[in-house]
Length: 451
Image (tube, rainbow, N blue to C red):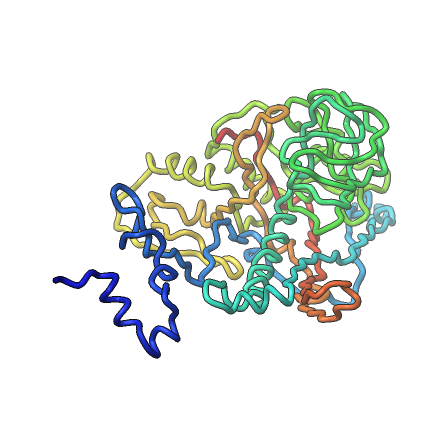
């Protein structure tokens, strides 16, 4: 008589093996009654238990290209600098043989106030998580994992602040909860002013106390209407390049903003005509807008931006744009391709490099010798509330731009359970720095571009 499988296993389990594994060790190892993997169809069992490796893959865009491209310098022993803004009237002129000397006048010297801003990133891991993450199926050293991720996030945050918009279009709503385009690009602590149908309100700025998606919690004097604009008065974090390259009276969406971005204590009440209101001497950058109507990028727009900078005595060193404009520019230049021998090359800017290009322009690396750097964080334009257009294009003379670092990134770890009132290990990364522009009129931007 043949021995059944169950009898065979029962006999095999007698003695020491049985005492170690127990009488039902096979049923503990496998679920169900059959040896399957998927547990589908006629197979009701499942002998496969899914396990995961310790590698955590990032599903986020962690590029920080603009931050890496701008020169970084030591802050130095200064809280600002002085700028000569006027040559003096009639101090230089022809003199006849016996004529009078020119009228004596002096240069106009203005002061700039610039203090560092602090950017912080925190993380924590509980004591229990630190233990269990090392067991089978865990992610490994969870504290080290979060530390590594926090470092990436910290640099990304600075890049986002450096490329944040200076103004946004609002929808009709409450004066305390304002919905704006791309509200997540603003930061808690930023102070905003409201342009209510051309009327400048809350001139000293109203602080953002909370942000949820595109909804900003503020305390404006009046409720905004559709098409009204909110714009930066002062930043809680790093000054944005969009704050630097802005002018009073430009269009954001279909409205003309009363922009007064307060950069280094200077209110931008200066129009592109370079007129100065009182002592507010901020000579403006060049801004090419289109009243909130999208249009395609053209070589004429780029040439105008470069010409404006050179007219003011600067020399463009860097072009920053989103990936959408990068490919539009490539298609523009494709028709001008000249096959005189292709040579692939890259151009370095700071610690970044351009995409590989050819000197014939089929794949871009430079335009008129100026390196082109696409950054996914580049600010977009908007036609109206929620009407997203393409990214802006910035043409910059980086000789007059720098990220001045007062304190390089510091890491602090705290294991004081009593202070935290919890069994957690806390970490903090912080950097003290600021974007400084020594001149404003040697930069340009092109807005209201289609995607």
